[in-house]
Length: 67
Image (cartoon, rainbow, N blue to C red; front, side):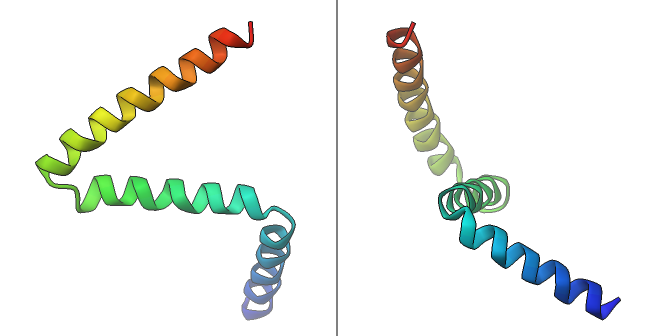
């Protein structure tokens, strides 16, 4: 069992080394979700909602401009 964990950890490290940008994205997304679920205050949530609305509009504009 311990050898399997070691092998899996090594495989994870190799994947992260090969996929730095994707690993960074997944880590950031995980931290953001954790913050929202576990620590965000009402004030934080209001600010995040505003930021999300802005980002959503930017993403929609990008999609519309590529059509």
